Image (cartoon, helix red, strand yellow):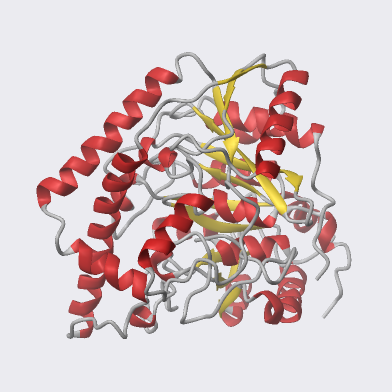
Length: 475
């Protein structure tokens, strides 16, 4: 193959520009991505399903003239269908599940010219915020191999952080784009509910709490990828509010003086880790220096009520997924088929009644209205993406029998991140700081429902003020 030695210098749009100018071919980019996968994946275990032949066939067939023509790409091994390939959802019970069709989002990636050459590691059913499935083994953080990549898009984040590709598909039902972005030092935007399609097999994920997009090294790749994939498909149950102009164009505009509220606390009122508190305060000060009006404020919420509603919706959806697979296989699942926490969540789903599910949806919709009122006063909310620096592998163990400790640790690790899955607001994590131990610390910014534009403008400003693009882990 012809060596492309400048691969690290470009983000996805930069690589696409090189293809368009003829300076590099799609095959050369794919060969480079595959070479990097083979070199670093044994260390980080980011790519768990390899579709190299399918990718070469894409190129041979001819690529659409989209904004990412010829750029190598990875999709998540969860809820992403690529015709003729397996998607395991990180589960032994789904290890042979092969799709005879693409999902809508996959088609939009292909129409954008992306070359899909594999799938990335995810915890079983995306149920936790670390990526350590029994089926595929743990993904390791490129910044420190003893630490978690976050989850559930942990394999995607590890692949981008390690330089395999500049941008990768991810999804977020309770923080699963923002958590791994924070842990691996990347930019991650969770779009507004309904901004990207979930079809054709379903209309929404986790009662609308889950949505797909990407993790990326640059803000502009996130914006351009959302431009390429956003919008309801025919038959979708609802759509996000209309965007005024392409998000990529928003980056050329700097935000006017924004009203920014910030908090350093978890929903229960406890302070986050001291290093996290320090970086949130430093970020708030930076925003003030950039001309924004910043004050400490937060909407009071009941974490117990939030957990109850979230549990009802997730347990019901988990049980439904297991039941569908049982029908496909012609047998019932056993505890040996699923990881211990997954089994317990699925079993609890059997006890959730129809009224319980409806009550859960009523709660998250009311929470959204409360935040809508709160956001009349503020344009953006700032807080930590994670309440502590990235955890070590094994600290959150889906096979544990000590369920109480497991969920207590989840609460300790996460601040208010899942709240914005419930409200449907756009929310992004930015890699603005590093811990004293050399681990990334992500800052979370949340906007009004439907207003990714303001977040992208702010992100562009912060990326310029505190750049991270040249920051790579040393593998």
